[in-house]
Amino acid sequence: MPGRSRSRPLLIGGEITRNSSFGTWHPLSVPRVTVALDLIRVLGWVAPDRYIEAPLAERADVLRFHDPGYLDALAEAEAAQSVSQAVQARYRIGLGSNPIYPEMYRRPMTGAGGLILAARLTAQGGVVHCPGSGTHHGRPDHPSGFCYLNDVVLAMLVWQELGRARIAYVDLDAHHGDGVQDAFAADPRVLTISVHEQKRWPFTGTRDDRGGGHARNLPVPAGFNDSEMRVLREAAILPLVRAHRPQAILVQGGADALEDDPLSRLSLSNIALADAVAALHALALELDVPLIVTGGGGYNPYTAGRCWALYWARLNAQPVPDRLPPEAEAVLRPLRYRRGNGRTPPEHWFTTLQDMPREGPVRPEIRQLADQIMENAV
Image 1 (cartoon, helix red, strand yellow):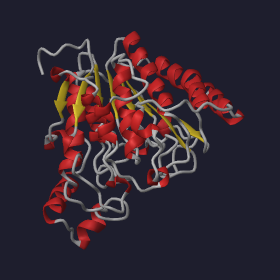
Image 2 (cartoon, one colour):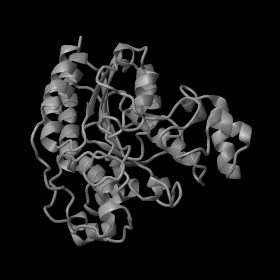
Image 3 (cartoon, rainbow, N blue to C red):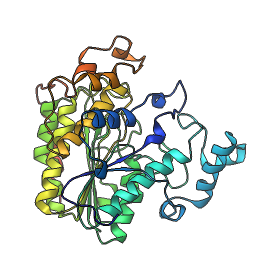
């Protein structure tokens, strides 16, 4: 979009998710993206000229990575709300945790469209936050881990076509970014770094997994805390990104590593994740390269929505109130979440944006992990 200033970040939204659900039984039955967008709006943090609604991706753009038959099968499955046994066997649609649901074509195509647009808008520099994207498990011809397309890979391919060939990809999700790592395993221009819970689905991304030589994996133990995240950020993530000399940085900012998420046993506060995003933003400014920050995992509507709104605040150096105003509380209080602490939500989920810090001891295996990754960095 010509004429847009690169001096301030852009926010790309995803209203399609407001009334979309994978089904009442599914972890993605809860709102997340629109919670973040609504918080950002009621806090007065985004001007109209800094917000863009994510478009539906063009088919040709998606075919850079995805199989045409698979894309057709997704569209047909959405229209019919069913698939034949042959299609199910070929493309794994409607199996396990990747169900048939009403927006199963339009929703991932919108996530891809938003992130592809983000890549184009930042071809000459700038910062974009796209909380409705970050589907890092998607495979060329089948869904994986709730991800029907891999919007991250698609955006990075667009960057490369536009001259941003050397990319640093940092994945903060509690689950290994396997789809992105495998997509670029043969491309030395792309460095993938993933911090994720060890021994958790998809059970890849071990410390010694180099993904063709260009991946650095940081699998962390249960209970991973803010102090330990700070060590990995300063001793491994930032030095690795700097040494790669990237022409662009993409951060997958999944919120499922937070203490109260149901799909991990990690114990971070949203401050730790936002600090990592802010540090990578500062590095992108220092290197004068574009930055995109996405959403990703995150299955507690209170913690995910607040976290992604906090990313936007940090990217804009926006002061965060100690207590949310009534308009923001009104976004959070009507939410319903029946897992874990969601049955009796703690008051701070309604009244604050920032969690209390979750500092703790730095276990020896965390320091050893950082040291080993850096020893094998070249």
